[in-house]
Every structure is written in structure tokens, then in C-alpha cells.
Length: 269
Length: 223
Image (cartoon, rainbow over all chains, first blue to last red; front, side):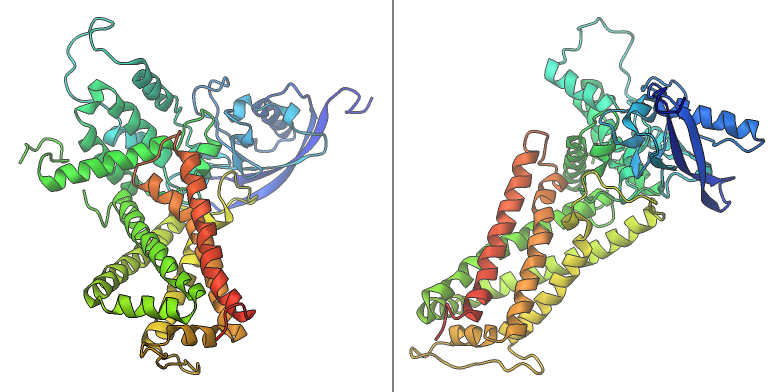
């Protein structure tokens, strides 16, 4: 029986192979055989890797963890689009039914100066963690566990913060950005915290620290292409980048007027 | 926090200087369209404008500062952004990037060159190898009408101006909506409106400015 009679397909993978961070990389071509439409993209890679291991070859290294679309670990650029281009879908939730028998699929790692390649499709995304360490937190004392509704937060505000908090930190926005910028990630963090009472206290200091951390960590600048929004598997919107810009401008004004200082720990003028 | 060195600070400066230039482009277009009213229209307008030297010089100083800042920052931004994305993908598939957005630096540099040429052409009125008609009209006013009509009678000059206006159209179709996003005035609800506003305004500029050399070249405006 042929592959099509089983409903399976054979694909050609053109995969970026790189043995280490400073090693030269190259594309190599592999056959993915007997792939069913029900395989997820990562399961398809598992099948290919099984074959590679049986043939005594090095399997393709790729990042993955939960495989249910919530952890943000999987990361590969499929035919030029991070996570493969299905709306609001991480790579692990992309299924092979989206491909046809005989398709050629290019697989590349996230590419940005801030994300050095570790091996094959795996990049080092700790630059995003450093942004959170620099600015993605609330440090003011909020006391013990408060009663459920002791701090009143309106439904629209809660929803807005939740939409921003949907970010899973996969870095697809940086990978998609022609400038290697992390504005969508940073915007989502800044907006989420600035929207809620606990986060409002340090909003100016946070945005200043975030903007500084982005350039310290080799991310580029935003030029409003909105490619990040198109690639985000969680549907995080560029309105959060506008919020980031708004928070920045507001803080800059306040600092220029001397009503606040964006250096943490310094007192008011 | 610093306006000229922080990433978003520079973005705000790009937006404000861009917005100032768009305002100038609106005013300049309204003035230019007076050419359709014949020599009495544009010559009277020019005479009136030059009767207000403070306004003219204040505008020149503000605009040249805005242009200079806009150009310097855009070159820095482009170089930084290229460095932040050193390797391109093998498959170049874009989800949202537009041709206009992708080529901002090139349409911008083209416009920068055009502005320099345009100032030498019709303000300084001295371009090597280009014959510029200068004289007074029947009312003793500087004859802008004859100067412009003579200039756009030449195919090369007319084409240069039309191409520059096509660049302006591309630049502003991305630039205008971008301004609102950069200044933080945007949200999900306003986004489609700003996009449409930017497109419509850029088309108006293209048709408004472009119509002048085209109309003159095809003899619709003649002495």
C-alpha cells in the first residue's frame, strides 16, 4: 500500500544544523516518512529523530516541554514563520494535517542577536528572563494574603491585564521582528503590571528599567511593523506596545518635571 | 531616562518630528494647489507668504531641525536594528510587514535628497545645468507660476517630482499610522482607524502634489 492510501505523507525537511554556539551552521535535508495527519509537528520531528538515531546519526535538537501549547518552550521557524503560522498556535499544537504529501519544510531556529543559537533549533532565550529580572515584577509590600475582593479591580482592567499576561515567553515576537526587538514581550509585561493597583506604584521605574534592559540585552528597536502580533501564538496585541510607549512618555515627562525619579531607591526631588 | 538615547525616546522623537513634517506637507499642499487658480492664485499666495518673514523663517528653522533629527535618528535606528537581526531567514515570508514599512529608510533617504533638490530648485533657485525661469508678473510680483510651469514642461523634472511624491506616499502610508502607535495614542479599537487615516492622507498627498507636474506636463495648466 502506498503512503497516500494510509493517509500518511512523506515530507522533505530542510533543517538548520549547528553543533554549538560558535560553530558554523548549515542546512541539511532529511526525509520525514510515514507521517500521519494526526502527528503534531514535534511528534513528526520525533519520528525523524528515531530514524536518524537508528541510522547512527545525530538527532535534530529542538526545544519542547509541555507539548500542550502553554509553556512556551517549543520554538522553530517553519517556512519563515515562527511556530509555523497557524493563528494562536504554538509549534507543538501545529498538526501535520496542515501539510500535504511531498511538501518541503524549512526549519530554522529563532534568529536574533539576543538569542544566540545553542544547537540546531535551540536558542538561548535567557535574555527574556533578564528583562523580567530587570523590570517584570512588583517589589512594593502588598501585605499578607488579602481577602478575595479587598482590592477592587474592575472587570475590564482585569481582562486587559489577563490578555497581556497570556504571554508565554516563547520569544516568537523577537524571532518574527525584522529588528530583533522584544517590544511585544516587554509591552505585555509593562502593561499587565501598570494596569493593576499593585503594579501601578512602580510603573515609571519599571518602564525605565525595561527599556534600558532591552538595549542592554541586545534587542533591537520597534519600527511598528506588527510582525510580532502576527506571530504571537497567544494573540498578544500590539496595543500593549502602544501602552509601553505611553508609559515611557508619561514617566519621562514626570521625571523631567521632577515629580518622580526613575532610579529605584532614590527619593522624590 | 533620555529622549534621544533610549529606544522608545528616540521613537517618540521620530514620531513628533514626523508629525511636524506631515503638518508642513498639509500646509504646503494647500498653498501649492493655488497654482490651479492660475498666476494670480499662486503668485498672490507667494507674495503674501513672503510678506511674513518671521513665519517663513520660524517654519524653516523648525522644519530643518525636524528633518535633521528625523534623518539622523532613522539612520541610527536602522543600523542598530540590522545589528540586532544579523541573520535573515532562508524563507522570507512576512505576516504583517508592508512594502512601505520595510523600505522606510530608502523612501526616507530619497525624500531627504528630494527636499535638498527641491529647495535648490524653487527656493534657492540655482541648480547647475537647470534653467530656472525667474521674473516678475504683470503686478510686479515674483512670478512663481511661470517658474513652475516652465520647470515641469521638462519631462525629466516632472518625472523626478512624481517619483518623489510616490516615495512620499509610501513613506507616509506607513509613517502616519506609525506616529500614533509610537506616541502611545493607539489601542486595538483605534488601530484600524489610524491605519485608514494614514492611507487616505497619503493618497491625498500623492494625488494633490502629483497632479501639479502631471497637469503642467500635459498642458492642463499653461501660460
